[in-house]
Length: 187
Image (spheres, rainbow, N blue to C red):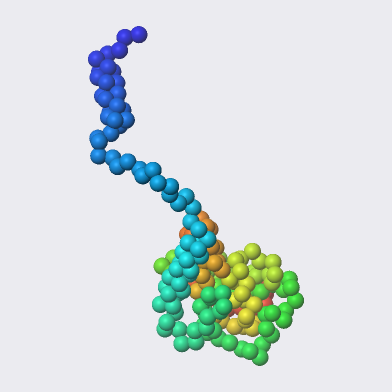
């Protein structure tokens, strides 16, 4: 098998680059021989997560500062009742398995729309069975039939560290607007 001059030249250049890559340029720093920490301690992780939670809460507070009826739940949800009828039936009094109808709009904080009832139809929400994250169940559970609300759900009560690719990025805060009522069969 004969190699042409071009093949030998190319092979030689590749070999030269490969050798210089092994030898380096002499400017590398030697790694210390002292032992290094391979994993964060429990204290490090607690401090990191506390700082992250404070950052998310601060971000949510800046978005909701103009909401006159702002309430914060113990789990970090920021919410406001837009229409509230405490004489109506409380959702928590309904039997498990009752299906509710949510006229909704779910967005990210950058206003990217995830779903709306105008585009996708009302959301059927079965008490105790719907596979939406816990923050949605918490909001619905505090409502009375006919209530309207808006809220920001932190990642820990929404889709968390992983998100729901490709639409919901990891650690996303979900903005919610919804009206809650009993499910009505389409006619």
